[in-house]
Amino acid sequence: CGNSNLSGDMYSAGYHAITNMDYSSVCISVMSARYSSCPGMTWHQMDVRQLSFSDASFDVILEKATLDAIMVEEKSPWEVSPETSSFIHQALTEVLNQPTRPRPIALPLLSPLFSSIHRIVFQKSFRSSRCFEKM
Image (cartoon, rainbow, N blue to C red; front, side, top):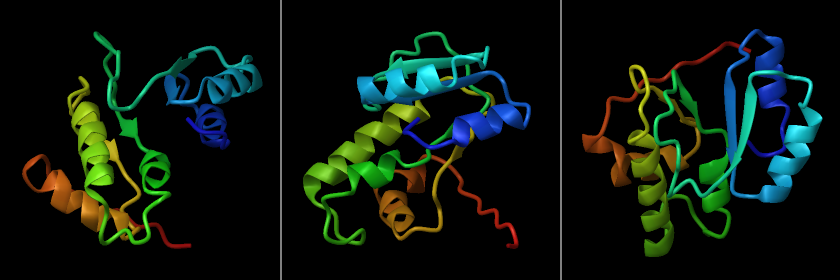
């Protein structure tokens, strides 16, 4: 979720069933008020390591900046601390366990962080793909 316009932009583009999640209850309050005129958007405050979407079903899970926030105290994305590595592993394992059809997840693949994440979690978990758009 965060405080960007991404959810609002997606809504304007025709995607109305959007589930937003953030660790910060303040962020959830501000954003849910900002987009209160958008039926179909839901807002949830929770820890990405312990999601409580027991019987939710997602078509896509989009990670916008959660991993960047987890990495903010690291000096280098190439050498993360054991604590950060564990946090990332817990978060991505939890996300990958969410029921989706067919379980796609979108990540910021262009950052050096992806290489670290790939080594930590994805090598045996799923096949990655890259998509580029010409500017």
